[in-house]
Figure 1 (cartoon, rainbow, N blue to C red):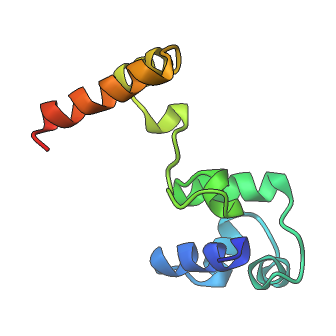
Figure 2 (spheres, one colour; figure 1 turned 60 degrees about the horizontal axis):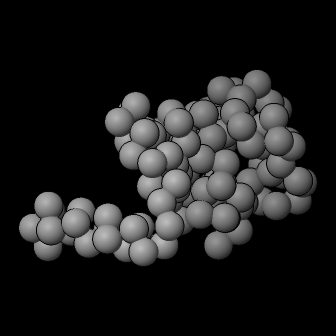
Length: 108
């Protein structure tokens, strides 16, 4: 799926028209249509605005992730962030053990 299709899908999921989105992004309707149709590249500043509008990650818009929210600081609370930092410091064996224990704790 292209980033342009994702932009359109996000708009449709939000039940918004192209005009409504263009207004929220302070764009001319014709320019927004060009972005959504893939006729023009989406500048980073506009991609950031789109991500903020729909509360999704830039990775999702760019097609680099299937997860809309990603693992950004804004998507995680402090405890989740600490857990990720601690996990990254472990070697592969300990990471495997930690994942096994997490499954046990969840009852899987």
